[in-house]
Image 1 (cartoon, one colour):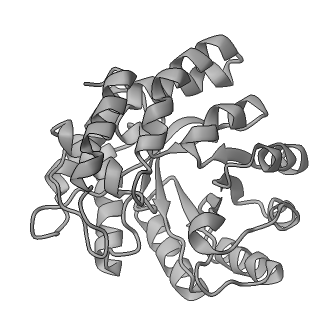
Image 2 (cartoon, rainbow, N blue to C red):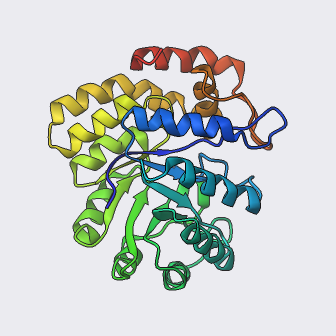
Length: 291
């Protein structure tokens, strides 16, 4: 359904930390012009953890309306409360998002059966296409392949974002579920290898800063042109690492700011990128050929 370079879009903010909708429109145009193949609105990189419920839905709605069918918009609607995730997902459906991305419940550490029943309940509550999201490094919750296999039988569960960075896990998911759902990388540093074993694309932080190069790299990998994909990824390798020198989205928001696309604001408890990392991020951007 979706493939290639899909940006986990930052949420631009003004100095008072209110959402900057003018800058949001600028970002949407930037990604359309540079070949990004889908936008994920209000995921982890979009500061979903600190946006209020009303802001969350406003950002998704504005993104869908401004994109106006020019690029698919996938709404982040995950929560550690099943009831809240259902409510967000229904709202995304009403706002005509193309699909939803649902992170595993964080902090409360459900069992595998609890995960299955959580995602099953959301899928039954709304027919919108749904992509699962497994990122145990942030959630303290790892959805195992057997659970994904069970969920892949549900018609409107159409994919999974695997952010484990484990290529063995990626291969296992492709072999087990790849005939029924799309397997996406959620880890830029291993995204190329992920696609070479059968993944359908990368839900990317790096694409915020280098959308054109990321798009070309993903397209080459999906076309089976491994030498071209590796050459492009070599340009991005330092950037993949630099954008995680501090917790995401701290470095990436600073990098997008240096491109003149957004302001510097980020919400507490996150803080702007430490000055000691500025030169490293700039150097990685130069190596990628974007400044």
